[in-house]
Amino acid sequence: MYKIFFKRIFDFCIALVAFVLLSPIFILITIGLFFANNGRPFFFQSRPGLNGEIFRIIKFKTMNEKRAANGSLLPDAERLTALGAFVRKTSLDEIPQLLNVIKGDMAIIGPRPLLPQYLTLYNSQQRRRHEVRPGITGWAQVNGRNAISWKRKFELDVWYVDNVSLKIDIKVFFMTFRKVFKREGISADGHVTIEPFNGNN
Image (cartoon, rainbow, N blue to C red; front, side):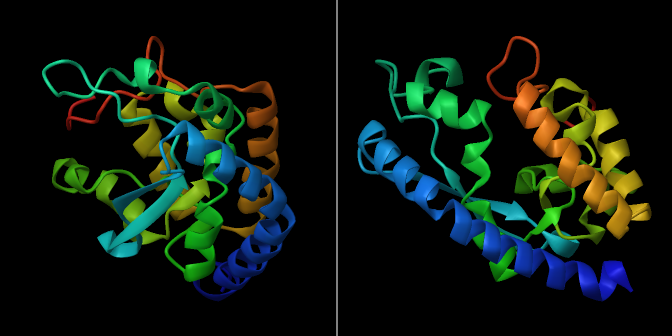
């Protein structure tokens, strides 16, 4: 009953209240990133949600669009702005996703929404991560985040799908605050962001 009905109600109420409470921070970061990113404080991208349905995720834009002489984007580490680095380390870049939760695209807790091009790379077990709405945070995030392998991350995602409950969601919710405070697992070793999934890692 919780997974099918009450979880969505809780998500909507929590996201709405959280967005109202965090609106002053939301406004300040928006203004700061507006100037840091040449008038583009937000990052929009297509992501697969429940049952693989595509939606548009919204996050704060932490990297600029600086390019090399040949026109290609510079490496992530070189495009990460000072404010963007702070926003990423403190996970404040996730605040706009509360709007996705309010809309119904996402949940507070669930497997993180990844890139659409990964859909064809999943095996049958990994694909099960889309049996629930994707979340702002999730079981994989509190058990390693970007510092664990893709294989392990998907195992944790599917475990969550099979064990969704109010008790697990509350546990993930409070573990997330601890992880953010300790800044654990934000990046994979040697990378600003996690390496792309290629179907084998």
